[in-house]
Image 1 (cartoon, one colour):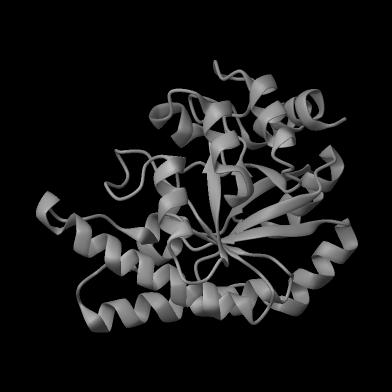
Image 2 (cartoon, rainbow, N blue to C red):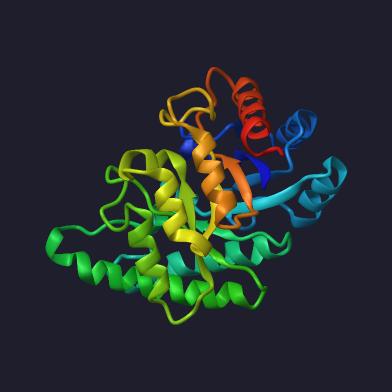
Length: 271
């Protein structure tokens, strides 16, 4: 497994669970100095970062791009993939497709989290899930041209009423006509929704394509009560060899959160 740290360039997401903010070169230098393998980037749009500049920065620091988040589609542009408004849905799809095109330059997948939206009422849940499945299928097909998956993230009940647990996520992505959508297992959300985190990861098995390495309180791993030993053992058991990426609050500050993360990564997954 490899380590990654989050970098947000989205002012509207201020206060959210991202370790580094705003200054991408400084974030990459800090990540390199601490020994991370990669960054996970959350830009406001596909044209917010020049690809040549980012490539030069990653080459200079020896980092990879682990994944690209699409959360700005919701927090900045108020777009969701499950709206019934056809024009708004088309804008949301185009936003993610352009993110896929951008991320593909760096051989990185995109994440669908907050852009999944939510059902307006219980009666509309099945219809909304249908919209989500269709969007994921088409985005997976778009990403397939680059040989990359799309990462779909189940969120806790306070953030969506669509898919909250990994087993529901497996049913969703397993029912798609394309196998090009993987699950993002976020340990913070799982701490809220799962009775047994290691068992949930083992059951999801090969569907897991990315992991957010966060503690129970959404702080850096080791700053809460999550037991990471059995979790990492479960990931090893299912053959997971991707990133453990810290989407966590920058507390007490960005450097301390990053340092705590890499120390926990080395303790549990470094061997």
